[in-house]
Length: 138
Length: 81
Image (tube, rainbow over all chains, first blue to last red; front, side):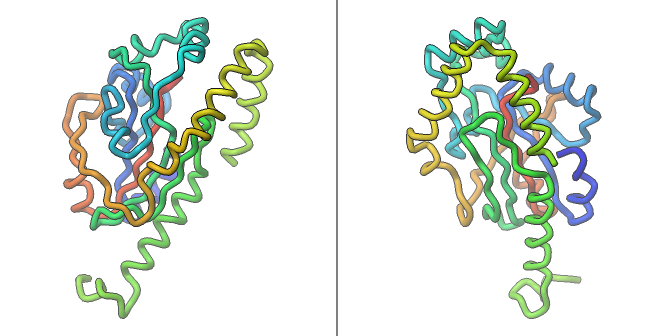
């Protein structure tokens, strides 16, 4: 996402990422990767659940993670052993979802360019002459 | 392309992870897909539920404040691991 932040901002969009991990890990990621947008903490994936993204890891998968030394109870600071499906959403200024890209495969990520295109399309739709919103422009 | 970089990571993981563990991981993803969870995910045309969440430095960020400025791009990820 970081590589398209400038382009998204040029189109007037805000960018945030949401993660269940502890803020300390997010601060480290911000530093290492030079991230300039906010990483918001979602303890227990409560907000992700509101989006329908939260799932609980089955016991056999939990055992695999623990065998890798990956203890989600430690990483996330709580013991629910839930995670969000990865997703990206574009929301218009009235709060309506205009693009949604989600997949159960944790390795899935939507192409950043796809999100740029979604935001550009939104910008065109809301600024086109003759639309209901055109009189709002100054 | 991001998809190509992810494919390289995926192939690396497939070599690094023992087959029995890999099978559990792949089956868990397939089970999740088959569970119907995708039918309950927020979709185009729905209203985003409002949020008020802390950023990595403890400052509260509200969706209403962000949307007052313009459109919002929201990414959800499991963590930096």
